[in-house]
Length: 579
View 1 (cartoon, one colour):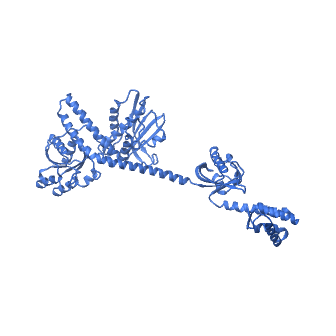
View 2: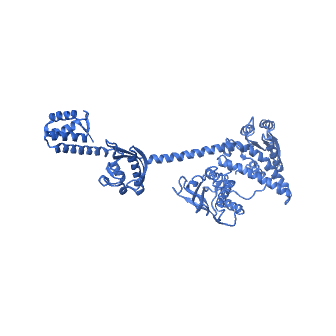
View 3: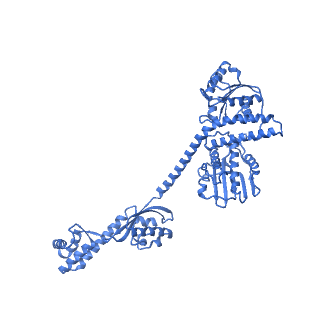
């Protein structure tokens, strides 16, 4: 404690008068080793007053008593000041004993000040909390310097709060620690915001990854699909003409199926990058799941039991191929998790009604819920947090690409659905997929194979790739149509201008030099408004089925296309059917 010179003069003056006290004290200071200053420690003031009292024959206790009272008053003033600040403040007489505490501190712990002072930290805090605090206090005593730490402590209501604690040592004239002064600020909200910021940053990084892969996939998709188109087309036509049970038909089937797998791979990459165009139609999910189970059963070993409970559900608006891909991916992951020891693969499909807050961020309503569970190795939380990240895989090299679940996640989100996962190490994994049912009654997509229809209308086919034009021409001619082919959009426009009534349908590529497909379509429709047009593309960021129809184009076809699908679309457009 520090005392002003005038204060301890006043203390001495109670016995001998102010002027005499001032004169004697100044003389005593001048005669001593003390400097003449305005502020002295309580020990220095007591020593001077005591020496003067003995020399003057006065009662020493008078001055000492006054100094004690003065010190007590100072302490009360200090306590009042501390109680009127929001920051938590407390003193520690040693590493584990509370001294003075302020009101903010006692309020935080939900206790009275008098019940805290002189108590041990062990008696107030949880054992782990007390151990952490005492360890910090010992370090301050040892190093004799201020230390700032972040500590998690429970408040009086049992809620865990984050505190920024500053512990400062009070040193005496000899450099020894007299006591510790601690201050604390509640930073729980700041920590929450930091955590939320990290989540947002992680989402941003994920978005950037998706954009990068989208750019890459978009760059290769168009050219790759153009390469696949003639492979698919020619092999399909040759298959139709090859003798049954012949080696030729078998070999062609291998080529045809390989090309289809390559086409599906490109679609998966585009789906993953969220740039794939889906053919959304009303479908019955239970039919898709049953078909996927039939396909996967042949590759699953006998050590894995398949249990299924698949109910007939209402239709959902979805792409059949994409939902099939989701099912295959989830079944395959479950099988791999049980590959070593075997187990049970359980597949359940049913309708559920989700209420508010059943699933965070998922609207209320009726959903078709697919649950795929296994009794395999399971996952801990660190893996669960990353399973939908691109290229993240726990499988050995050669067993997985790291795209499977990322693709599944992309498909479900693009279908306005939701996917969640629950897993524990050595206890298996459960995936839940929710797809919203169609609110209005619509005709469900028929999954049976539709027959290839033949006809004789006149079609103008336009594509700058010669191989594409040739295979489209051959496919359409095989179907019976009268086909005029062109590798130049400019020349195709001239041919149409010369004889607009010569054609019943236009099929044009989107990406072409000199004049893009949508521009060609507009110029053709300016000449003849009733002419139906199909726009094709291997990949286009600037065109979709919806945009094409808004321009008056009848439909949008993603290359490469099978002859069956081309036949169905051409026939529907020519017949002006809605689908």
